[in-house]
Image (cartoon, each protein chain N blue to C red):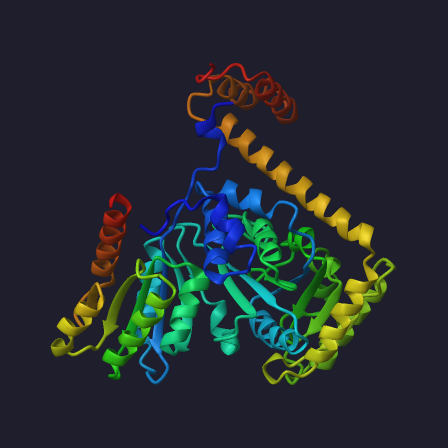
Length: 143
Length: 324
């Protein structure tokens, strides 16, 4: 039998962790994004409210390609600082990190300097996030 | 690049030492059937068969995830390291999935003795994903004492878990079905332990009684299936459930445990063969298969006969467009 037809083709769905920090109960948006991402064919690990180190632990165990953190109640700077520190500790800086929710424009530069690849605030769509994620992961694959 | 190939040495050094990052990567490699999958199998070969594998199955909403959470807690108290595999369904239309079992399993953050992994079913029926059996082996090789497999919320025929787990727990809850549901064949028959969860809800006693009747009317077995009452969210009945798991594990003798591994491998090999056969028969340009199909459609051949002829074709590897 010819091998192309006999091996199970290697399927690699994009795995995304969507999380919210513990103090922030505004989860309407992130639930919607989870649903949309599922419809785009992503495997979405959905959690309840987590501390930054719990987000890192979850990302490790689930071996995700992308972490999306939705923040609508402030505190974004220390949360992302802790998150990147944890990723660095485990040598996982190759995970794509994105933000969402309501994050003040004034903080965007700071967050991007930390390593946040994109921030999807009010008025953006899940589709934009999908396109960005697919572009980012394709670039990595070619790098 | 994230999904780079790491090779057998990496897994031998880090996976067998039980390191979380390596364990997670090994699971992904096997799940995706990527270049590293072979390296992982090579490394875990001969390192499995030590863990107690426990399956939790039952209807959606019966409380499987909550029960797994509190049971994991109990296992930690008893100094067991725990691996949890939680399977959720993939969308048959897009292939996407929302893996939400962790929502009820968040009590173990920061505990290195617990490793939770969510798997999407990826089109596989039967309550598990195609790779689940091998993910169990990987966790076993990584040194987990107890491995818990939570199936997708099942109906009445998702019985595949019995091929994988040594102890199968079927989780029921009051108000999900009457006694007719309880006596239907399938999922109840695979139970080694029956649990009535949410025992604080109305009619819980009645549900337990119906299950007891169904079990007593069934075939007599060496292991009489006990019915345990739990309230997962309060931890009620969990210690008793853990004791019962131990008793069940002790009741399985060593040869039976080894047989189970062989049985599981037979199943895996048979499934792999069937998948390859299906792909080969169903490939584009398989003229000989088309001819058989047309013969059946015209009423000139019985389905079974056509199936047998298709098998002959595969065995001789002839009659296809991609003949060498």
